[in-house]
Image 1 (cartoon, rainbow, N blue to C red):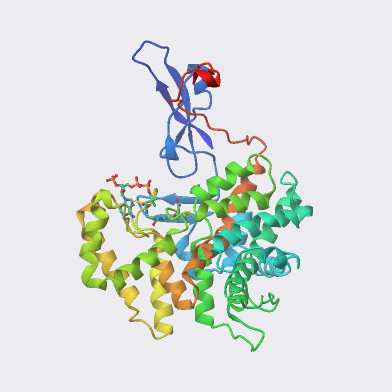
Image 2 (cartoon, rainbow, N blue to C red; image 1 turned 60 degrees about the vertical axis):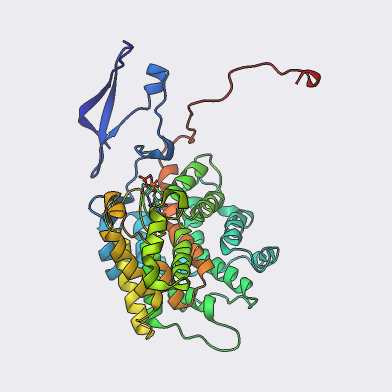
Length: 436
Ligand code: SDX
């Protein structure tokens, strides 16, 4: 970051001395006002619940222009990465800052492939869960439990440990998600294979059984790989910020990523894809396209607490570029499977059209986000709704670990410790029990 030829002056109407603060510029996007010395100079904090106007860090990984609906991973537009690269090339880009050349891609793919198995003990850990446990509950446990197995890559201050932990996490998440799925349906775990691509390996671990060979379908594998790319990273979203805050204490990378998994689960964040599909199925059950008007009325009624899941975004005040790509992938997969007339897709397209013309959504700049179409395509591929967010976590792991490693490798990073505006009781004395 570089000092801008600008300064911020904070003046107070009560006559307190004004304070000057430096303004910094990045390479693209909004400048920042450096308030790090504000408390020391004024005895006051800034107040920004939900971080609506707060840059919590500097980063060179992902840039989002919410007004333009633009998403860049290390400067490359998501539209180009999703159509010209595969997920492991994208992982290399996010981790190391550059797309690999042919040799680099071969080496990185081999490195990840060699780490796809998990310690054999982990299957017994899984058995502690109920078969009907939500996959995200299982994943929060399994990812955290990796700290109990990979002790030779838990020292986050050691660059070598950071590197191997990143590879292990990226490589083992598909195996763990597939194990969580197989466990939930009472089928045996399927081991990864070294002769399959990352996405094909995942599909085989999900859908193969020991009884017959499983031939990955190229169109579905490509769609899965693209879904991974679209979910790989997204600047300082809630779960990435959670990983950064958690990792700032110096805890091991597996524990920090497990915190990200837990945060992603929420319906306002990564859980929205599951919630969105359940919403579409509810509308379908209650009359389908003819009932969209009633549903939109409910959404606009503040007291209903009903939201149009898969719509709206803290940053995008235009169409989420990932939603466009996801809709295209959705149509490709459904056409390939001969279900292009899937009623849920027709319902989603109709819902989107109505919402984009309705003043309530237009005035609030609410557009479809990455979660609006992702559920329909995953359901068509044969993935159960309850596993959608676990797949989001699988894909986002590379973003989380890239952001965590970026923070830790900056020698100036500090433990995250925000302050507060205290509105509770002033000091008072405890009364003996008989007097209370
Ligand atoms: C992800 O941050 C990221 O980058 C996240 C993500 C990533 O890749 O990491 O992109 C992934 O989490 C995508 C978002 C998935 N969530 C959903 O689809 C759930 C539905 N969306 C909303 O909950 C909401 O839009 C959020 C949480 C996504 C954003 O919320 P904000 O920025 O805090 O905005 P807000 O709640 O203050 O909404 C502003 C207004 C409010 O109305 P008013 O009080 O002004 O009258 O818009 C309304 C909201 O009630 N609103 C919605 C709505 N989203 C916002 N109304 C109906 N349906 C919605 N979906």
